[in-house]
Image 1 (cartoon, rainbow, N blue to C red):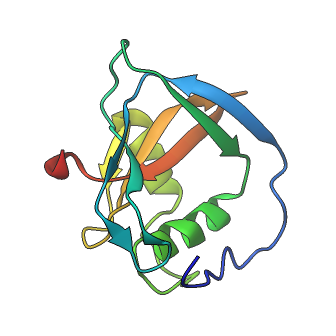
Image 2: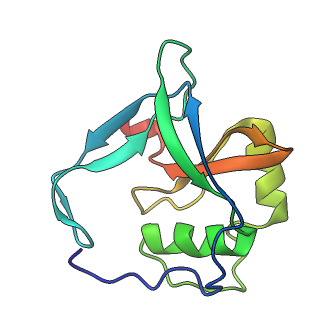
Length: 131
């Protein structure tokens, strides 16, 4: 890692770590990143395709922790007062499957890939316009 990340302001560990398989294609793009250095970055195609399978590890964290990571992954200042991703955005992404939020970052598209125990499983990836 070339650039340290702060992580979530709330340092509470995830309540649970689980693995799952989702019908979305994993792909790599770009040549390097400021944070990680040389090598491609991983992205998830937000469109479901039953012939695709991506194995993912997901962490049960709070909405605030997810928002902090979303901000950092998109080069934004972590700000707990920002409404960028709040409960209304969570409801919107659950009903629409995907919503682009941070237009300047690589991971500005929040995707709901399903639910586990009635809790939405969220990830962040590129927008459809870069596919």
